[in-house]
Length: 367
Ligand SMILES: Nc1ncnc2c1ncn2[C@@H]1O[C@H](COP(=O)(O)OP(=O)(O)O)[C@@H](O)[C@H]1O
Ligand code: SF4
Ligand SMILES: [Mg+2]
Image (cartoon, rainbow, N blue to C red; front, side, top):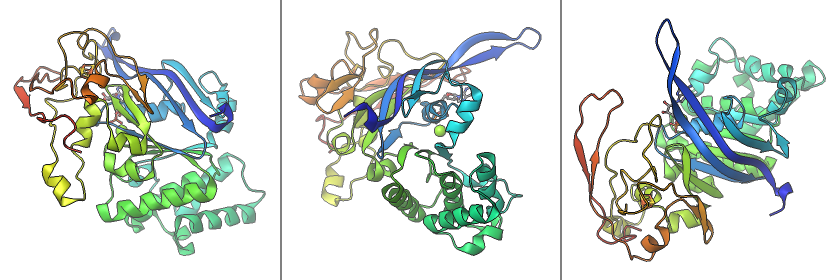
């Protein structure tokens, strides 16, 4: 793939939030490593799906990519332009080309603004449209594109259903004519029946407008349909990345296998035979991540050597990139999963209890 085919290139991106204590003397006592060394590329016109448990750093990565949260380290190139060192004025101009859609349209739309005012605001900020009539024309086309009627313009966000409100959120992003849209859990707050409509709309808009997407979800089933590439995140880093079909048919990282085992299969026979891998314990704290492989405290395949003391690199295995020392041996069935007794540590030490994970007897047999 030539460089020109890559719209977004992220290199060793880190976002560490300081943890501060003290009233008189504001001290930094540690850092939440929300994003801790992520490399990824998003090809032009394609969809990158980013999945992982709540708290693993997906939203922070999305925001840091758009420079809405300043990265602690690393690079983000958008269409060949380095964003992390771009002067504020130039970044503002760039923003038009990179828009965001949020999970909860109600909290991201100003309840006192009607739809016309919501959509006009961005056009004015970025000086788009020659005059009022021209802006009206752009807004009219955008409403059409997201499937909202003209009368919506004079209405307020609370007058719409959840699905329609998300269409307003999409229209607000789209009206500026962006190339990249970061959609952070765009359907998580919607009824299941409405989710598919919104996902289909995003899909259609991509086809007709050539958009590039980063779609963030905690649910693998949601991103499957629209993603070309899927990245799986765990505690601030990618553990696996693969073309969508490959990831779902042949997950290689133990964490991906566990996530996949929680996705129901439509075929009832397969569903009956499907093995579930329940992960032991909660996500460890990103302020104090486990040593070595960050997944080793919960991994049913963890080995006595390497796992606890050597951080696995994301390395190419076939069409996938995988951060596991033992991925090949696990795929070949040479290593068997075992029970994991997790020590569940709560942030403030409020009680600790052991948890047990049940692992499949046959690796891979849940597919
Ligand atoms: N502004 C912030 N200040 C401090 N910690 C934050 C901030 N934003 C997110 N975090 C922490 O960073 C981690 C990742 O959060 P987030 O990116 O929201 O995860 P996700 O979107 O995957 O649920 C969490 O532990 C969260 O508490
Ligand atoms: S490196 Fe070890 S602990 Fe980490 S995923 Fe692989 S087997 Fe599990
Ligand atoms: Mg989030």
